[in-house]
Image 1 (cartoon, protein in one colour):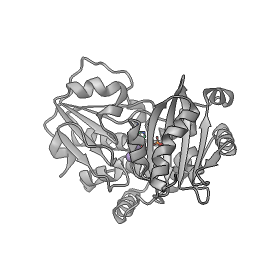
Image 2 (cartoon, protein in one colour; image 1 turned 45 degrees about the vertical axis):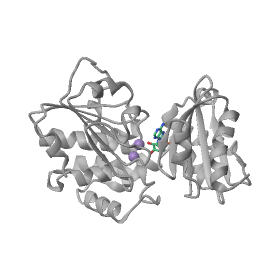
Image 3 (tube, helix red, strand yellow; image 1 turned 120 degrees about the horizontal axis):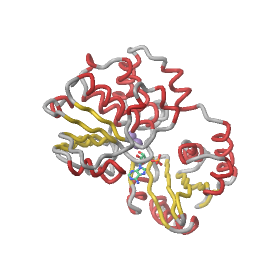
Image 4 (cartoon, protein in one colour; image 1 turned 90 degrees about the horizontal axis):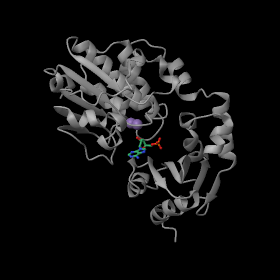
Length: 316
Ligand code: AMP
Ligand code: MN
Ligand code: MN
């Protein structure tokens, strides 16, 4: 199946992804946007997303992302990428009204939404899946760059266990378009500002191990974010840093989003299915990487998450 067959008769198409967009979300949304604009020059194609982090400014036409939503507008097709409709955020009213709804995702926790549901949980990233839904000869350097960023970010630079032979084949095809992949990996994945490094250091310093040292947890409060003058986008990567601690099976990181409200990130080495833990609290994700939003005190949240984790680790 090719994506063009599902949208070729549409006069207007909207594309969106999840709130707090990560590299796969931004790369997928922009890759598909650039592709459809090129394939369907007569159609109106719009892209809606929360403002991405500045590191993604290397993606062409990223400034065309719209954050203002005219809820009266009706699109012929609405495409939801890298999530289900529940995490669309402000663009959701447009999705509800659209003539045809397409969902393309790779989250095991997503049963799919809309009229056309392409959810493949064995894909490393939505970007990898999108590559196979595009005609390779219609891809150009700018589209390839966006898709490559998606793959790189969701696989931790082709390192996590979600990297399959197909992931590497797609990455190989993409780098043939000649963008500076080394520079892109450095600037979008590894490089951190000084304050980002400082707050990561603080979170690591204050981390605590529990459950026979098989779990590790840390938290960043709003006061800490104010002190370092950072926002949630600057906290990317902290949970992965906690997960690399030797003998840790499961890492928990949370940051305060409001009064008694935390955004929780979970990572595991495979011995805990963190998607099922996150789903208990209304979130989701993958077996080794998942997230949710929780209400309650920091310690209550740790206790509640611990129940599901301890059961899986057979710890009483
Ligand atoms: P994060 O910890 O936010 O980096 O998310 C890890 C993985 O879980 C990513 O694939 C997210 O898209 C997914 N995820 C995070 N939060 C949620 C949520 N509330 N519902 C469904 N999936 C989520
Ligand atoms: Mn994502
Ligand atoms: Mn993804």
